[in-house]
Length: 86
Image 1 (spheres, rainbow, N blue to C red):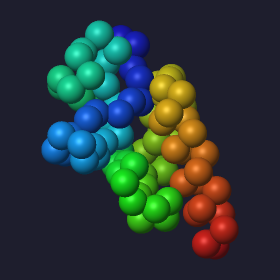
Image 2 (cartoon, one colour; image 1 turned 90 degrees about the vertical axis):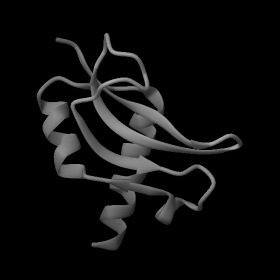
Image 3 (cartoon, helix red, strand yellow; image 1 turned 30 degrees about the horizontal axis):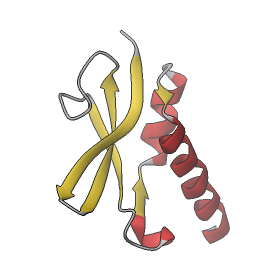
């Protein structure tokens, strides 16, 4: 089973919000998913617009899950913000 970490669109028309989910690659984008690991709101500034469970993301990456390009950028931004806070 090929597993990916990708965005799942939610929200209203013109006001997108995304859930970051771990899903089987064969499932539709807004279909079933294995686990929700965070969210992304592009309409809000960086620190409040992202929330990510970094421990779960790292677990899934170790299991072989491949993030999409956008999710990979979000992971890098969030991990950079986490290191600045600590």
